[in-house]
Length: 173
Image 1 (tube, rainbow, N blue to C red):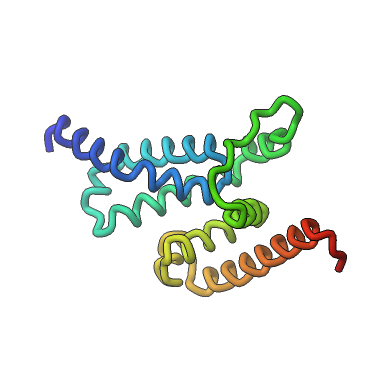
Image 2 (tube, rainbow, N blue to C red):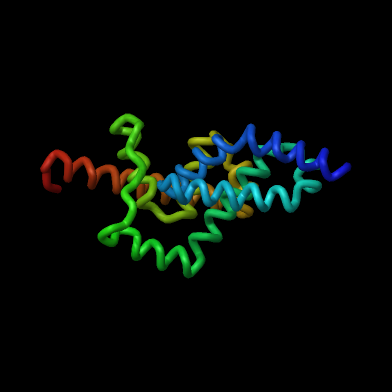
């Protein structure tokens, strides 16, 4: 395929999926700026491997897998550990203003408090409504691993949400 056609095809794909990828990235990292960075890195990877991407049966699934793997790889990097420790320092940029309902914000905060692999599993299973097998394929692990990560993630999510509700109502355990 001529270079111009390849670029036009990729541009069309990227423009049509950018908002969707950004929402998924935000659910994974809970930060709009980081979500933008994740989407940019994902689109760069997709562009580099565009000929392979064009042969894929489910391009959205492929793009989602690249995004999730980029997020998980970032979580393992030394840079992420350093920025996570320094994120709440005085003078740090405030988070984007909330535009969602209060319950949605509580869920997003709770989701951000659980480990990245469990978070990725829950986002794929419940936000994207993927089956256990599809999630396993996207994460490159076994269905049993998806089931255990889902179970642990839901348990952690419930624990975080319960702690928040106790704190908000002033009740003690």
